[in-house]
Image (tube, rainbow, N blue to C red; front, side, top):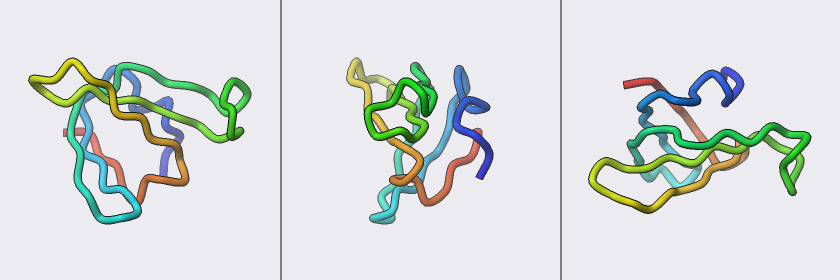
Amino acid sequence: MKPLKEYFNKTVRIIDVDNKEFSGYVETYTPESDSEDEVEEIAIKPEGSNTLIGFNTNEIKSIEVI
């Protein structure tokens, strides 16, 4: 998997480790050095929603730009 920073400001489809699918625009990126868990993190905003959903590297099974 590419570093999560490469998905910043792009629309993505994420499959998490529980095989749940999420799609949305990557609004935020947090590098390992600034993360509480010391892993990269992103947060997406699903279309039509004002809520952000956060993921860290360990929670993502696959990610692709759509």
